[in-house]
Length: 408
Image: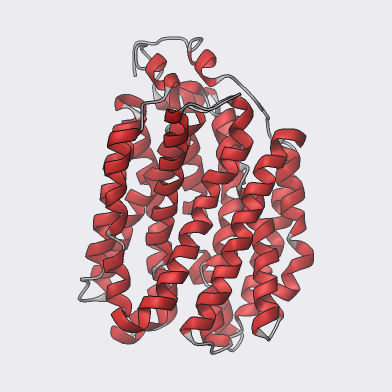
């Protein structure tokens, strides 16, 4: 099935929205050491800012998801992008660790809204047969943002310092101009907005088994991604004492692997099914853990990071389409983002856990990285096969069958 120009614009806007959101998030993981030195504290104390960001993301998913279900995906996406961009800029003006923590918590609210709104807008707009590939493209936005942050760190950090890294984060606000001029509202929402709908709590209660499954799954997925990415630059700087350019190189290679993995398994899921693709990708991580976490040379660490992220983001590449397809129609902008970010909430302790495990083992981050990644890879593979699958569902047609209700 051929694509319209509007469908191309929607996909590009959603991809860039998640890319730039992730870019703003990952700028911080490169500068934990510098912030700790600036405010006279320890890295685990600064890493708590990452925990706060993840902790607040469910609130953002709820707020922006409900706005998108009520007022439309397109206008909500624009407001969301402006919010996370401005909060990133303000983080660079922090005068204390406490102020930074507050700003990163607020940033978490804004960050939490983008994924659910953007993925709903896209999945409701594109041809069903293209969803697997587009799911991989959308989720590739996350490592694309990490890669972009890696490039900025390698090229600009020595010139602009840690505060300047945050100042660069205002750039994503320009994306709003593109969304405003080129991106239409989703067809499924245009059907839904004319109907009176069941409220969120009623819908969740009616689908409570699905909700519990999705939250548990996304908790494991967030441990999988954050456990393999967030402290990796710190691992390279602290344990291996690499300079910024070397750290930048390895993380760039890491994210190229992540992008390849997301695109590959997203596309494969269209042929073998969403659950089976996730199962294979998750287990693929196990043979790569040793080279990724315990190598000692730049080349082997880069290779290990590349292979590991093919697995991690390969599994993640299926998630946008999987969650949107199994979501109740009347809360599609809220449900996928909310369960995703609730998983983030439950996994928000990861950075602090890993930092403390490393400190307890004499600064050995290898043990912390390998332990988390190995455990959750097995758990994901074990539970995904018990979940539902609605591959190829017609979301616009399905929206027409949603029953009305007296409360919205």
